[in-house]
Amino acid sequence: MLFGCSRGGPGGLFSNGKVAVSVDKPIVEEKQATIALSATLIPSEKADILFPMDVKIDRVAVNMGDSVNQGDPILYLNEQEFALKLSQIKAQRMEQEALLEKNNYFFKNKDRLLEEGKIDKSLAESLESEVKTIEAGVERLKADIALLESQVRQVVVNAPISGMVTAKNVTNGVEAVAKQTLITIVKPDPIHVSFNLPAADAPAVTKGMNINVKVEDFSNQAFTAPIIFIGPELDPAKKTFEVRAALPNSRSLFKSGMNAQVHFVSPQKVKVLSIPTKAVLNDSNREYVYIVRQNRAWRVRIYTRPNPDNPELTEVMEGLTDADMVVTEGQDKLKEGAEVNLWQ
Image 1 (cartoon, rainbow, N blue to C red):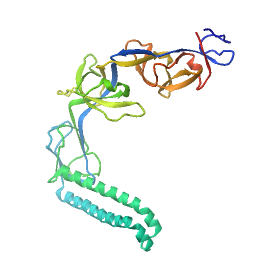
Image 2: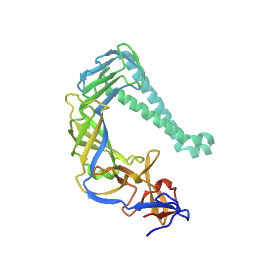
Image 3: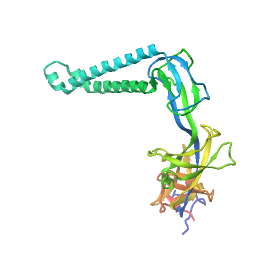
Image 4: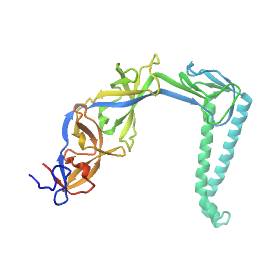
């Protein structure tokens, strides 16, 4: 079928003011998807040594680059000052618990107390919020005390994990500031390969399966790493979830923060939709296409990845169905809801 127009070709205007466009349905394939994604190397474990209160450091037992085993002494605190501050924070907890008990009594009996005139209306209305605030404060104090008592045995701070000291922000005899990281220990072997996998590719990974990893500065080598973690939460904005693989690193060749590429093939066939790359538009890093329904063009957000077999095609992971009529020519002249005529 042919249509007359005032100027030829897709993107032109017909005499009736409609935009001339060409459309195609997505190409549908059943295949084992080849997946290639950017990744980052991160430590398999990391421990930051810090305290919820100021503490006096008598002696630091480690230096940057030292290897430590779990349980090795790394810091020695001033015994008298530590005992004093620990007793102070415990006293704060007891005061807050007493205040919480008092406010809980008022809150549970507020109607009777208000009727008897023992509390006023403004206090009654604020009791629930006050109780929640005090409860949160008590929980924080309990957590701080538990942290101190778990980290410190006879004022000796021991390494919570085996690994390498990668940060040291403390020296002998100083007063260390509350919640400031004093020492960082990381476990470099294995090192984790972290990448974000599109939700549409969730069936492509299983825990324990091996993937190929190429690391920057080792571009001519491919390494094998088993998947050890599949994230349970989806990033709603990016439609991805985190996956980690464990890369052996006994010689510490790989460093945290290095960039990498992961490659693997889906173990099962999935339905893959592809459209011409030229059909894909971009607005503030959000990809979209126009589809035609009832002779009008509608903008649809899509999530894509390159087609590994044909650079002129783009695979659509989410946003389209195989029945959609995608605008492949003339989309640069379109606006949401514009009337169109199909060009052939």
